[in-house]
Image 1 (tube, rainbow, N blue to C red):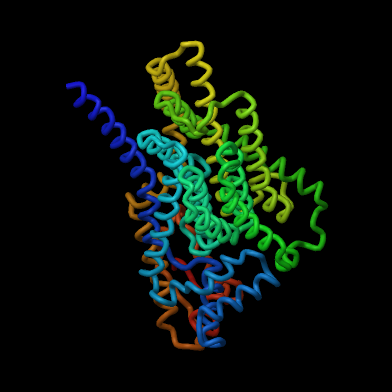
Image 2: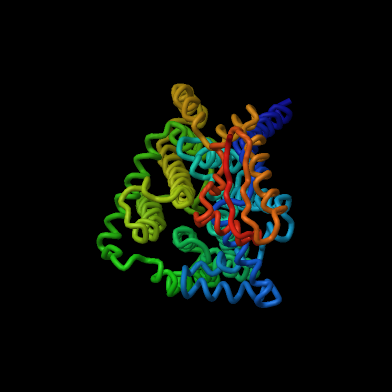
Length: 486
């Protein structure tokens, strides 16, 4: 009988967390099947297609374009290559674009869960913490900015792909430290190198948490010297990325001095801290992480956590957020996170939220060790305290969820806005595809509801706008105008 009860308890919690994860994640992954070409997608796709004409082979052409962009535009060597080599729309139209968007989002979630599972070890705790992380990424106020990295093709290439690779690199680094198998070290180095080939803030976070793994596993690293290989690969990629002439070409001639950039970075981080810590959903997620780690006796660090290590982890997570923010604040000259583009804010917040979760998990381990020495606050009491806190927060949490990315998408699917909006976008693209080469295409879209949860297409009535001219180039037209409504 006891075995049966324990079995029910174990699987009931696992099933509950899986259902919670699906509720939060499913609307976003479903919306990936309703994406379309937006903004820079037109120029990148059109320019990449021309490489076939110029070089006879897209992969050879992509190498030339990568080198050209590296020297003139930005050092994101992986993004510079894959944006030209993939040509997803040219190869398979919107169906292939949808498949790519769904797969990369699924890979992001899977790699993140695998990293959490390796760190936490316990499956129930891993699912619970992953659920909490998903809530912070898709289910709290401010997450609507995530449409630029989850629902925009170009955004996925420059941010989401590299974040996914960095999670895989970190997982491989941990796997090597635990198993000693050299293939994990070599693969980790390769994945870490390419993870540093996207936006510089993602590059900084990639190097940051690879270094954090080495510090938190220092006793094992002393015996397994190859553990440094993933970090070395990430650092090499970061140096290659940061040293690109294109990065300096993009900077304004009147860019602020370094000390001003550091000050702006501090204030940007501070402004984001205020946003995160004002969110009741974020607080609820961290409480869940804390009590899962206490009750399920989760050890993030294999050895005991003295107060010195707790201070090191606190300082490390702060530095990780600071150096992740620095490329954004310095290059854009802003001192508030609200001054950054949505893709920059949301990619930074992925790192910030994960660093908070790690900090809370280590703190829970430290608290558990202190309480076990004093034989106070047993697991049942800890769970009761956590549940009471979550109950009191419930009204504020439910109110905030309504402004989240996941809820906004679910609501627009429910009332039919996203399918209706997608039909309008599909009409625009189909009309441009069917227009005569070299003609002046004018597309009139019947009055309809356009989705606020999805990313905007960027096409307007003005044929001289950059996006309109890019679309004209992609579809071999003289000009493009899109008129919405009557």
